[in-house]
Image 1 (cartoon, rainbow, N blue to C red):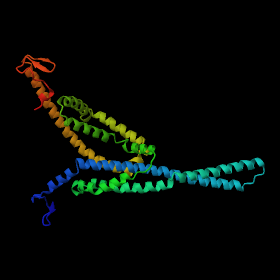
Image 2: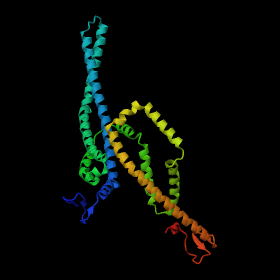
Image 3: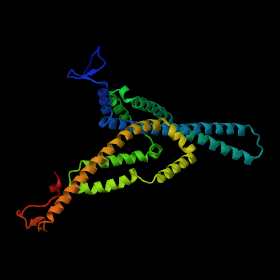
Image 4: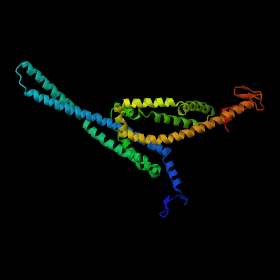
Length: 337
């Protein structure tokens, strides 16, 4: 592909100019399908890593700050008690024991900080977090642009795949409770996206199914369930649901305000909105295809049942008796065209 300097249109290898509208459609196609799915997986992993590292940084910073604060308190208390005048032997014994406990505690806390390398790990987490942020922001910035102004998704994947691989290889020791907490922070309000992804994969599985019997069974179950959700004829239900969600958020706004404005959540929301928009249209197309195929197979079944009712048939062990061809078998694949 090359660009003619005297013409703004893009020429393909055929030498024929491509109109601007076709150029936009090519870019839209480039930002869909497997390319968008790959970038979505990268951003989801990046946002989770950023959230995990952010919580880990806060956790280890609190350990360092508590150690420093306790050291200040113990040193100040020891100095104050040493300056106080004591006259009795019992008071001297008590203060000596207290000084010993405070000194021993300060030594223990300082030793734990050095043994577990809290300060070194904290610096490592901060550096790794900045690298994940630089990687993910580059992609989400392109997604927030209009399609015609975006760099091709395949070019972004090719350019950043090595950096993504290097970041994945950089393994750090983080407690499991921090990872679990980070996952809950990111996905506790993303249930709609998760349900749409599950439904989309289920619809793709049904649409590509070659077993007509299984197809009719799963298609009926899936379409009946999803029609009730997607095409609900009770607007008051959705109004009540919206009011309940608004009431819940306003009640817990102080709790979830920090999560909503966190960088990891913003990055994740950008890619989810882009992917969810495309998945919704694809799901509608798949559901229409499944409905058409389901209606066609059911009509063929009705035709076979009507035609078979005018001739005597005795079906025994899968063979037909009373027909010109007694060895022919009735199978589900006979219903296909």
